[in-house]
Image 1 (cartoon, rainbow, N blue to C red):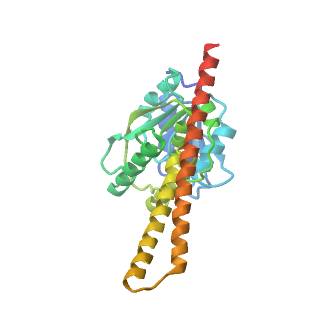
Image 2 (spheres, rainbow, N blue to C red; image 1 turned 90 degrees about the vertical axis):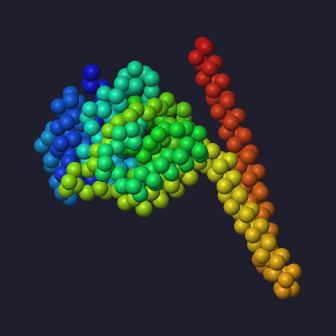
Image 3 (cartoon, one colour; image 1 turned 120 degrees about the vertical axis):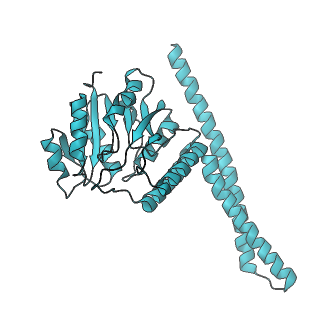
Length: 306
């Protein structure tokens, strides 16, 4: 397989224990352009990467998301990008399977499914549960099942990446990319890969609770433009139920002990009215989005027929 059109993108931060092995593996496999975007490592990651023959650039900000955006937009000029972490948990042996759908024009974005062959110790039970919940939530909210939206092993065309609107600076970038693929109709496929445990002596930069919370918030926030009925509807249901619960409390207090709660009654009414309005707005926004997608589809079909 010819890799002349492929840049291997590796965002790093303090990966001195593993980055050398990652670069050597991909060079030995035939990749001649390995780009390391370093986030200001203190352990000599950048020096090791340079000695192993990688291109090393330093991101202007911080966080994986910012490194990926800046790396692709400013330092990649090839047609295809193969992205992975620098912690040696992904195998170069899976690279061909990741890139082939792009070469065959069967997809514009490829996600490596770590759950297809996850070695023992590669992910804690807590992280597995969190990943499953996030993936199911994504499928429900955005209507696409990408198997493993948090996977860091990706292959994509540079053109499709530039069509995405990405803003996350941290580990939420994978979630953002998955949402953008679903939202913009970027042809996406999932391939099975092997996921290895981190080598002894290397430490993860992932903080499960903190980063998991960020990912959940990003997933919900992005539903605003891709599934407005869910986004506004869930807020509307919450507001309506809260108003109804307060109304029940006020009514019980008035009947049983003859105590009126005028302020709470007003809050209850406001909550119910606001909730109903959100539900109506969500339904209207969903209708507009459906009409918009239908119009775009007709335009695409007319363009292709010409």
